[in-house]
Image (tube, rainbow, N blue to C red; front, side, top):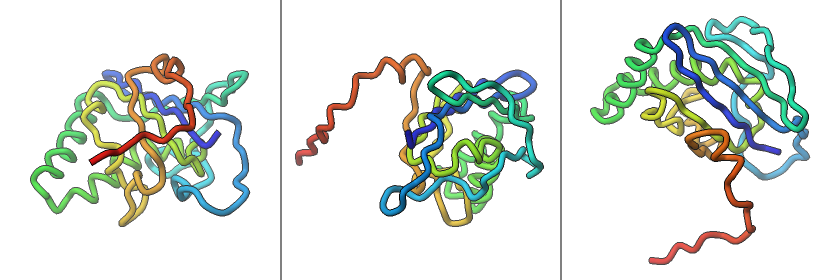
Length: 171
């Protein structure tokens, strides 16, 4: 119940973000990862309140958001960020924050308090290290949530059930 599935559909003119979550379970306090985001409302890239679209599914709440960034501009922003990481550019933090604000902040209300994000990237987003995005200054997304990338929603739904056993790390 603390997970959110985030699928991106990169189009020629805009990008669609689909967020699916179990209905919110209010935290009972103590332990766990810090909540994602710093806002309890939906907002667009300009920080304005964004209308919620989509209809809740029977077992999941599903919402869609449109991000006004075309395929080419998004690819350039992702490349600049990943190249900046590789070259240790002084623009990396600003680029990490800008990409978070562009791609995930519009879904802030849906993601708030989630400790696991299952990301289904599209197009150039396959090369984006979502863990390195910054929801706040000096805070990486991986510090707030476990990040899992999947090729499709179907792949996530068809995964084997968790057994509760912890993986063995042997040296």
